[in-house]
Image (cartoon, rainbow, N blue to C red; front, side, top):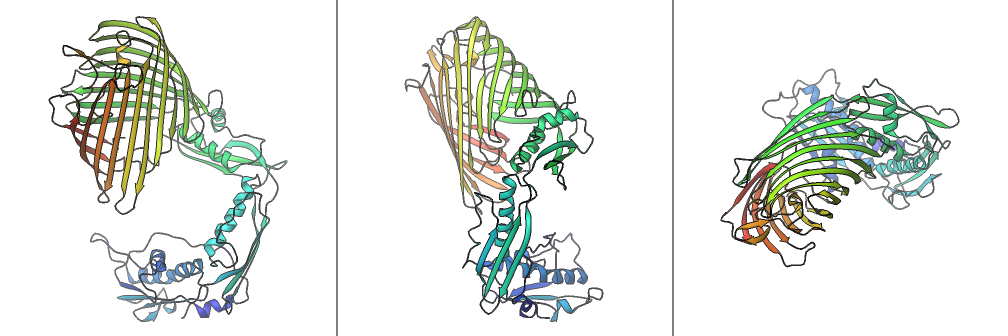
Length: 608
């Protein structure tokens, strides 16, 4: 059977359907010798055909059973439709396709009586000429809709372009509020002698719709009224796919649901409204986790947390964290942290969350000791998937000890912040940028002076290549304590440099303000710079080279009068499902002598 000119001849001066859909399915793994002929392997279409075939490029492992001849035959017969679709999608409407199984045309073999054995399969492709559009129209189109460039006279007559054009036209109307826009008619004529295709597409926008009521389809432990509040679907307003997407994301980011789907009704409701139903699957109520990180000579850090995702039935969350760090470390003593964070989504409006935080922390560092209690309440405004703003009111009381002596203070704080996260992957970023800005005015109730502590963390990433991708990563950090003199500033608000997070290769918090006589305190200004080159050596392993530099000054803002140090090193990364495992070795390259020759850092995720 010659599928191609014989079968495709019926296209001549005949109308054919626009949308050719075929299931991609899972590839059948074959042991027979399969060859694709009639097209050079240098042709881009060779790879496209190979990728679309159930026969080509398949292999089996030793553990897997070899496929039967019936399975091989079924794959060969399914390839007719799949590979013809590839030819049509690339403008070859008069090509020829032959698939032979041990010399016999696959289409002529009965699937109920397959050969006992199949040794060789040949797929022979004759492309023929490319067809061009001699007419390309779609009407009506919503104002502002940008149609694909390929849908034009003289361009390759690709079914992919036709499908994309129809999809773009329908989505243009949906974006304008016409949720039930559809393809009303399609006139396609393929003229084989002229090697052209004429395409006339007509859309039916339907009526302009408004959002109808949102109903909850599945039972949930989250109260229905809270689901509606969190989703924030604007009932009565003009339909918008973007609003539907936002409502879905609001429900998803609560963490209370494993699966979220907002489904449009099949029928239009009263007064041109579109009812929406929510299909939700609750997440497990509780979650428990732990982690570990080791650095030399910082020691071992252990973290643990417990999470309740639906505390009061309104998707409120309560997370309790505990951390012990500096275990068996050579720098300072052991640090402790215990915190509880409560969050209530959709407070005041659907994109504003309320939070309350209580924490107790002890920091036993080389240059200072601090034990503090923090109470903070505030709101978090989620402006988009990438932009978040924070505003809070807090009370902080602490006992500190440093080179200036012991101190007890109580502060009223106003923590504010903004986060811009445009990274493609939080744990292993390839491209994008990230900025975290924190500004915290504080009013001293006792033991300190009024002031402002600010900190900026900015990161940028760019990746080149695919097979052995090279990623360049840059990070800049700026810190400042404005207001109190160095001697009366809260000791745990001051800045130090050195170790993971600032300058690898240097001991943890080894750089501060030198008071003489071996006494060091933190600085009121900090600048940190980091650069990494990440090379993907294999699918699982990567190699990293890095350079870090840090600056600490006594002044409120950087003026160059302080002290700098730097470090450099190499690391390896091993890819896992939860992010790359990181192993870095850094050495000091400049700065005050510390007596340490190298530092080791182990963790999960990239360094930044």
